[in-house]
Length: 185
Image 1: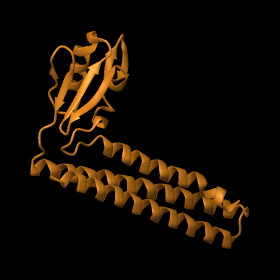
Image 2 (image 1 turned 135 degrees about the horizontal axis):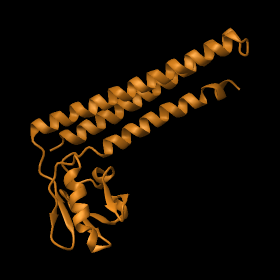
Image 3 (image 1 turned 90 degrees about the vertical axis):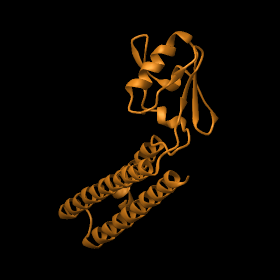
Image 4 (image 1 turned 180 degrees about the horizontal axis):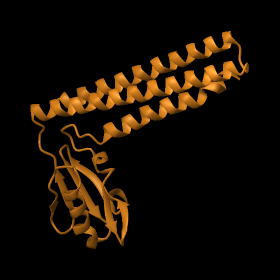
């Protein structure tokens, strides 16, 4: 019964890490990564549609993403969506496919990206700590209602702290991996 009380909080912490990893996948690290297109949508027949659903996305070379739409009439729409996004890359449209050529990252840009990665990691840690605080408050309320004993409360608080430490360590690990990836030339 005791572990069921902290299960929802563990799931919230897990979601925080999952969200961080998802955010990291959209940060480009010098190599072409199709995930940078995840947040871009195309106005397709009046409906905002993810770019992955209007064409085939490939990485023919280390620094090039190629988008081949299934319907050639969407070429201009895809080009417009990329231009209005915060991707910062001009698409090359040859009438059949769109190519995104990623320039080499400058040392300064790499440092900016690592700062951004660390900031996202710090925000994720704050979110995990907020979940811990919510869990501790909820456990104290349950103990006040005499639904669990003082010893059970201490045990659950300890387990919650261990979970928090585990997820913070995981966030640090993901942050370090992403920073190494960005700084690798």
